Length: 269
Ligand code: ADP
Image (cartoon, rainbow, N blue to C red; front, side):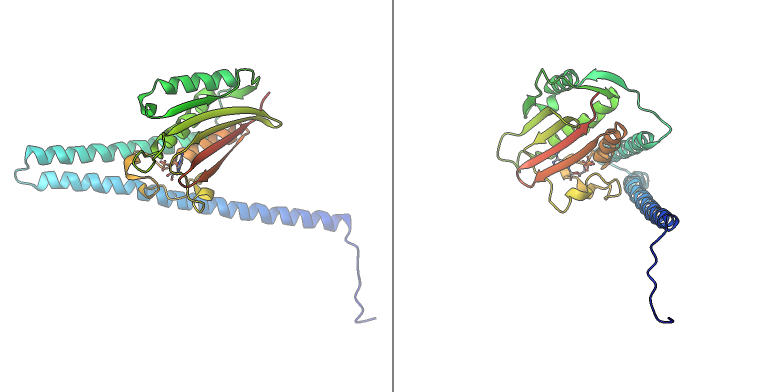
């Protein structure tokens, strides 16, 4: 019987050990991914902090080394320092905000609110904002929506601010022929409420779509057109962190030249 194979039915213990081993391997892979993500983010952040600081240092050196800089030169260099300092402030503020949202020891400051009333109020505030003057602003939230949510209002406002600001940044009139549209919609679905922020702007290339919410995806000017360089590159990462902390999800559908939809699903009470 030396060469005969023995087929042994695995015992309950064997199955448990196999399951535990698989779970441990999965946890290990996830940990490695997280560590890699963190390292890439730190590398990106260091790069993005260094770029404006180098520019500011260069500008200061230029002024201090010139024997007799003209008032015009000084004005130009001060304007450059001002722009770069604003970039730095935006990046540092957004980094701090993202880390504090992701900090598990910090709870959301939630209250029970009527979603339709919240969205309407947000929308009408935006219609009074001159940044959206050129937009055809559309609200598609039924008044009888009847959805109550548990929400940290300030943080949800931050999410909508990031999405609205992006819609404005990436709907550039000289690229776009049609009137820019910015639409806020909401509907009740089985798993809660679906909120959509839509624009008919530049759109996002298919190859970039899977990466736009990832904070490790180059936090640099390369992502942002010249007209929108004030962005830190963390706006969507912040939006995702806030929505997930509310137990929801955010996704994006986009077509280059046609526009972009950001879709938020939040649990209702
Ligand atoms: P940024 O500061 O670069 O705008 P975000 O995290 O807010 O950073 O957005 C990430 C990237 O997603 C942007 O650089 C842009 O390429 C793309 N994006 C986001 N929103 C839109 C939009 N409404 N239309 C087109 N592209 C967008």
